[in-house]
Length: 518
Image (cartoon, rainbow, N blue to C red; front, top):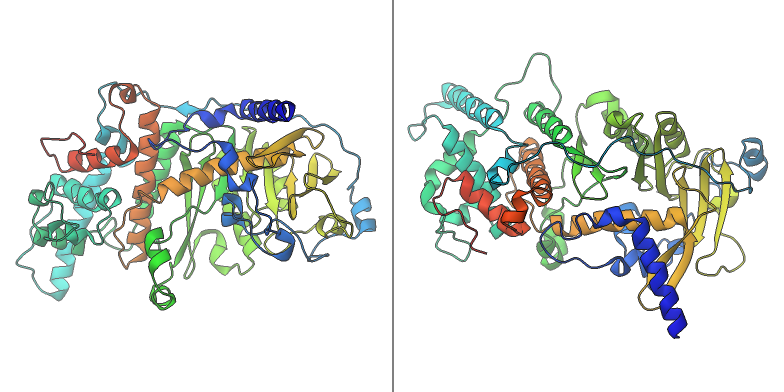
């Protein structure tokens, strides 16, 4: 028993050594996180079986669906003869991925005396806020010309706009049921910030708030009211941080308050309006920094003809290309879920020196060009940790069994190299290195999503462009905190994520006492 314990410990240490970059921000949100052994992907339950279309209770599956292909011969897959003719072989060989051409980390050195708002304004600078002021005043003027004067309105100023942003952002820290609760006398009242602006004034600014007041003759897309802000935000993401070699493409958790979802009735859930947009991100799997955001309207016109696509794998493939445009020639490694994973996309990325590792699903993935023999479940029972592999060029198709069949497509890891999945109760499960890497990197993003959901802005406007705005503001604040944690300023004042958010609110409201009360 002691020998087994030492062996398991050595395997765990080896796995951690291989992915030591993931430790950069173990405490990125200011709270202690669990080690990798607590990742549910590592500890699937006995009653979980991807073959039966029962998702495993893991972060990767929460986002990607089941990993098995329970139906042989999905559309586009190849018979045994066709697969041999196309170059798929049981012969496994080593592959080598060129080294990453960039250095991960912040691109701007912040002073040790930098304030919280200084980090926030890396993404939402004064000129962007000034534009909000100008556009809001323009919209208010035009609105009143059309619908009659508003005696209670006067032009908003930059300090007022910062305070307005601060009030809404405060809902991500104090979780009030409505931003207007700040001025109430109830449980969610916030007497420390309420005197900075009257409720009536806040509601006037909220009524007229705009990023782009009027539609341009050159742009008719549905997001025209926020597109300049999204473009500015994207430029600031790229200018402030260089991600690690390993990155993840996925849809982040942007649903309603998890507490509300678990307590409300089915009728209440049905009554809530569904979001009219989808949002994907490219995210650094070593730090959680969101490198790029892509928003797609589910209805109406969209760029690159995405609105006309009914085939989801094709749509998601085009989204992936949009998110990875800036990675060409850098030897980055991208992890993807089943909706994006496809042989054609991975081959196209390889020509651009972008390497991939993705989970496959016969229901969600484009299986064109993949051997049917690897997508169908074997007739004979399998042992946990058992795997099969076929290769075509540098591309490996791996079928790995762990209380269900999980399939991975990759050209980023040698199929001959072995890894291990660590389970707290049953010890270790052998697996190809690609499987270990996928689990390790996706588990970090799951940890980010779990903690991010605590700090999203609770304000829920009806307009789609406003929903996107406050969502991306939330992401910008999280990115600002990551940069803060990696700066010299953090060594002076070690704020948790909650304290960081509270101080940001007070600095935006220009309150004299800016020390966090948490």
